[in-house]
Image 1 (cartoon, rainbow, N blue to C red):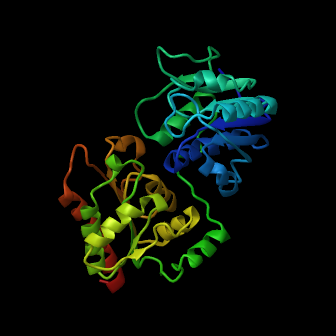
Image 2 (cartoon, rainbow, N blue to C red):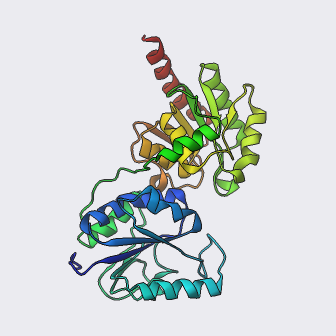
Image 3 (spheres, helix red, strand yellow):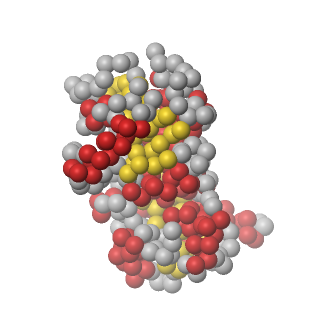
Length: 337
């Protein structure tokens, strides 16, 4: 069994995935930092994640852009860029490399090429992994958060809890002001986030619009959030609404969106990155899971986060019930009754 040792000075974590995937790995990285407080930890990830060492300076020190690999769908392969990436990683002489991309069926041989002193991660039967005792059989059950903590515990690194985090910075306030959304008061509005990567993971716009209109009828402002790539579905929701929402989509940075979610009374969204931000901020939410994996990706705290698995229970009435339950509480608080 691997034991934490003083000779671990440089660590690389390979996780080239999107926002929600990264946030679900933060509790494991928090445990890793606690075990190696003096080590330099580098994240190898997608280009968008270059900001994460600045967002999580307690846990991450450096970032290196991973340029793609055959079999990984997140981005195309650039052979020359990959060769340069691999050369840079090898020359860094990492002591410990973590394969935290997934079950390892595609990337284990590649991560071994990092030439770290120790390589750890996941494996599944029938696929290659280094025979060094540092690879955990992939736990294909439970939440994504707990799967990564299980890897740490397998290596003798104690858990530091399952809470998600999303630290805020002063520039996030500036970005929110620049977007013209700095005047919203806490708990007076609801964030509606209809977008998600892949149209098959998006709840119908008409349902989001009806939920948004109900919030407006109760006297709450409605803020439609999303990226520039999600403007089409956001506009579809806006057109289907009877009331006029505030459209933040395409105007806000990631940090500004996190601020909006932190101060919102409620988030209604697909099971996507913002649902994990709501979990980190402890903002109540209604999450619609369209991918059939709510036990893996949905927030762990089901007392303030209501999750509907639309693949097994496509019941709009249930979503309305949860919304009314949340807003009845809000009305009582505002009236003092």
